[in-house]
Amino acid sequence: MALLSKKDTNLITDPLADNNPITIQVLGICSALAITAELKASLVMAVSVMFVLGAGNVVISLMRNIIPSKIRIIVQLIVVATLVIIVDQVLKAFAYELSKTLAVFVGLIITNCIIMGRFEAFALANGPWRSFLDGIGNSLGYGVILIIVGFFRELLGSGTLFGIPVLGDQIEKTGLYATGYENNGFMIIPPAALIVVGIIIWVQRSRNPALVEEN
Amino acid sequence: MALKTDSNVYTVVFAAVMVVVVGSILAFLASFLSPNIKENERFEKQQNILYAMGVNENGDDAGSVNFIPTDVVENEFASYIKEQLVIQGDKITEDNEAYLIDLKKQLAAMKKGEDYKLPVFIGEKDGEKFYIVPMYGKGLWDAIWGFIALDDTMTVQGVYFDHKGETPGLGANIKMRYFMDDFKGETILDGTKYAGISVAKGNNDPLNKTKDDNEVDALAGATITGNGVSAMISETVKLYKPYLETIRVK
Image 1 (spheres, helix red, strand yellow):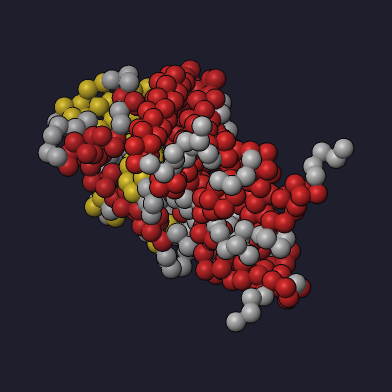
Image 2 (cartoon, helix red, strand yellow; image 1 turned 180 degrees about the vertical axis):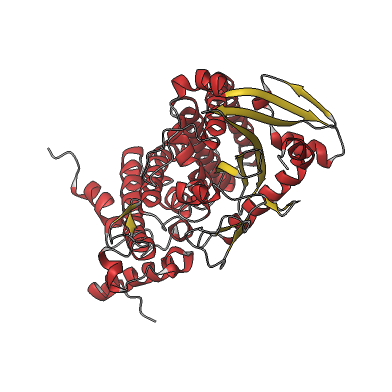
């Protein structure tokens, strides 16, 4: 017996391509713009969201039959906020350095619309295991876009990857800079992320015309 | 039996139970972990103060920020920091726990017109004296703070900046070495006036070769955080001016 049935596998793979949370569902755009100036920040955010969305989807799914529908959004918000605060506090006590790195992401995770979006669209109607897979799948799809955007923004904007110079030394004019190449300062400001995300959406839709909505 | 999850009574009871449960979990967790967290924060403060006066494990390359390890920081702090002073009005007293003073609370007290305390740390390294003062201000999203180490000519010997929630890759870069190292050698004086140091765009000095212009080069895409740093430094300088004037070699 396979570990995952065909349907379950799709929960993981769909968000990576034709049901990507950022490019197709258009969720989580805010954080995709805010923190993708660096590859490292993109990666940290992707991992954090994976943890919170995976765990949150399970909790919401377990509670789905007892949550009063009138206040379900508030309940979802409390669940995600509690999870994030617990993680934050535990890290502060036992892995202080790591908690400092993650501190700026805490607020961004709670307000990430992917999380509320998946709670609402999936976890409220499905069992815990499938919800967990959906959470992992969607956060992978989110993470992939974040990392692609982070890669191009850091490379073209700062000439570095993970903070390591890869195009030569800008001040000493070595490597690519010797040819007169300059970093594009525009790439590190948020509007550049919108353009990169736009290009990804364009490429994806021209490769798969089925994704294009009819007017 | 199916629950009537849409009735008003159920909704109110559910909300109340949820609040109590979540509240107790968080309260229990917070009180259980708080000794550990407090200890970590204390070590961090000591590391930050020592960092500003150049006691750190930074390599020669302009790489990442390296503090001295937490397990030795307490001893190192005691051996490098010779005096901890508290300025309260005209009174200056010695206090070995001055580094635990929360500048945020003191500044709030000052704004309300109440008495406030300002800590100063006097460090010594290789026969040189450093006067280290804490700073506190606001960036784009939330608080920023740090320490600035001065010598008796009011030349900056080192700074440390930190922030609560500046944007990663932009404002958050105030705690990168390439930004903090730029402050070294700058003076906070303009003639005999206490001017502070501005984070300036377009000062035509990206490599920061001019050290007496009271300016360092700004971070691209982080104008408001940079302005926050400028404001924080000038605020601090203003606050500590009477004390700095007594130690300055004229």
